[in-house]
Image 1 (cartoon, helix red, strand yellow):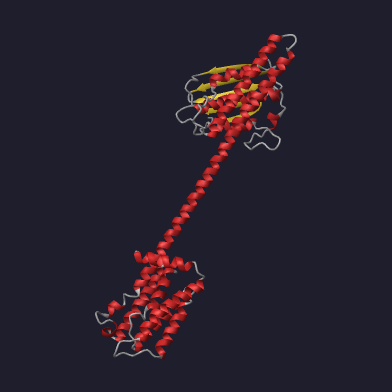
Image 2 (cartoon, helix red, strand yellow):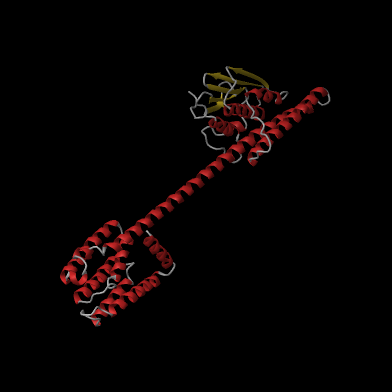
Length: 410
C-alpha cells in the first residue's frame, strides 16, 4: 500500500505538468536507469553494442506515447526486452521500460484488458526464459519465476486504478449528497416562505378588515350614539393590539429567538373573538360548535381558526351578505368546518381559481390560503356558490391518531 501511495503522489505531481512534458520526463528517468545497466554487462556475456542502444532508443521513444497507445507501447517495449535476452545481453534494469508500459496498460484500462495482458506477458516471458535458458536469466530458480515479474506492474496498476475509481465514486456520491442537501434546504426555505406569507396575510387582512368595519361603525354613531362609537373604537384598539401580538409572535419565530416566550397559537376557543370583531358591520353572524372539541391537535386548531378567519374576512369584504353562519362539528376522528353566507356572487372571492392553481396577478390569496391551511393539517377543502345565492367554504380535517397525514374527506 505504501508503494501505491508513492505512485499516487508521483502521479499527482506529474499531473500538474503538461502530458507531453510528463511523458518525456518519465522516458528520461527510465532511460537513465536502463542505460546505466545496459552500458556494463556481466563478464562472459555480450557487451553493449549498436543493437543494444537501438533497442533502448526504440523503447524510450515508445514510452513517450504510452498514454495514447498503452497496449502498443507494451508490445514494443516487451519485444525490446525479449530482444536483449535473446541477443545475450543480461541486466537487472533492462526490463524497466516494459514494467512502466505494463503499469500504464493496467492503470489506464480495465480489469479484462489487464487479465488478457497478464496472460500474454507471462507466457511470453516464460517462453523467452526457456529459449535463453533459466540458468542464464534466472540462475536461482525455474523459468516459472520469470513468468511472475510481468504480473507485478500489472497488479500495481490495477490497484491504483481501482483506488482512483473508488475515490471518484466517493466524490460523485458526496457531490450528489450535497446537491440533495441543497435541494432539501431550498425546498424547506420555499415552504417556510409560503407558510410565513400565509400567516402574515391571515393576520393583516383579517385585522385590517375588522378594524375598517369597526371604524365605520364608530363614524356612523359618533354624533347620535357616542357609547356605540366608543365601543367600536375600543374594538379597533383591541384588534390592533391583537394584530401586533400575533405579528410579534411570528417575527419571534422568524428570528429563531429563545429569549422571549412565544404566545400560544389561536384555536377554536378564540372563534368567538373573531365574531366580535365584525359586530356592527352589517353582517349577522351565527356560530355553532358540536362534538368533543377539547384536546384537538394544535395544527388542526390553528387551521380551523385561520380558515374561519379568512372566510369571514371574505364575507365582510366581498360578499355584501347580511347573514353568515359558522359551524365547527366533530364526528369521530374528523372535524368539519363550514362558513356559509347569503351574499351575491361577486368580488374577489369569486375570481380566485377553484382548481388548486395559484392566483394570478391582481387576484387574492384568501381561498388559496384556506386550501393550504387545510392541506397542512392533512385535510381537504371545497368552496363555491350555493343554490339560491350565497357562498360556501367547507373543510374536512383529521383529528384522530393519524391526523396530519393527508387522509382528506370521506
